[in-house]
Image 1 (spheres, helix red, strand yellow):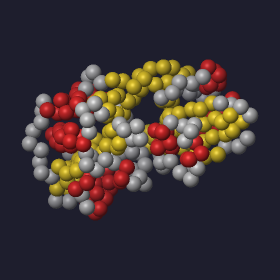
Image 2 (cartoon, helix red, strand yellow):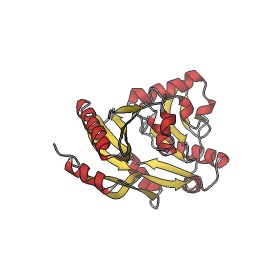
Image 3 (cartoon, helix red, strand yellow):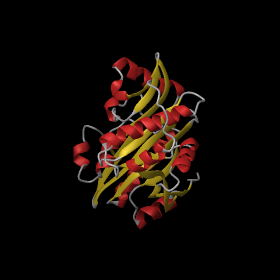
Image 4 (cartoon, helix red, strand yellow):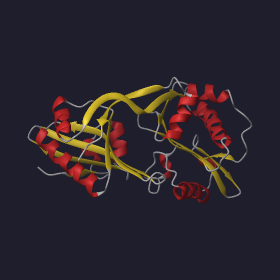
Length: 280
C-alpha cells in the first residue's frame, strides 16, 4: 500500500466515491485529500487547511472520511498526523457523513472522541435573507457594486485589500483561487475613489446552494455591513428562487453573533465532530 494525493489531475478517478461537494473542494489549494487502497477497498481522508492571519490560528479540519479498508485507513491517518505535526497544526473534525464504529474506535485510540452535534454551518433561505433585510433596508450608496461591475484592476484591488487586512472569511486560498469561483452578480463590495470599504463574497456550489465565503467591512461603521447585506438580498431575489439555500459558516465570533442576531431560528447543520481535542 502507498499514500497518494487527490488532485485536479486525478479527481475524475474519485467522482464515483466522493460526493460532488467534496470533489469540488478537494482540488482547491486550501484542501488536501489523500488515499490508500487496501485488500478490502479504498480509504480516503480530506482535510481543510485553516489559516487565519488575524488570530494566528492554523488548523487542519478533517471534512470527509472514507474507510473501506482499516489497514489502508491507518496508513493515511498516520500520514495525516505527521503532516499536521510537521506544519504545527491543531486538528479538528467536522464531517458531514458519519463514521463507522471501527473508525471511531481507532480515532479514540489516537486520542480523539467523535460525537454527533451541531456544526459551524447554518442554513437559511433566500427568502429569509430578503425578509430580514427588508426590516432595515435603507438607501444603499451608489458605490455599492457587484463584483461583476468591476474591471479586472478594481477587482484585483478588492482581493488585495482582503489579503492585506488578513480578512479571508472561509476563503483560505483567496490568494490563488480564480475569481470566477464567486457569484459575481450577487457578491458585492463597497468601492469608491479607489478605496475598498467592504467586501461580501458568495459562491454557488455544485449542489446549487449559495455559500457565504466572506463578509467584511473595512471601517468602524457597521452600516457598511448593512449596505452589502441589503444589496445582495435584492440581487439574489432577482437571480434565485425564494427557497434557494444559503449556507453560512460561523467561522469566528463576529459571524456567530451576526447569525444569532439576524437569523436566530436558522437551521443548524448536524455533523460528526470531535468532542475533545487530541492530547499528546
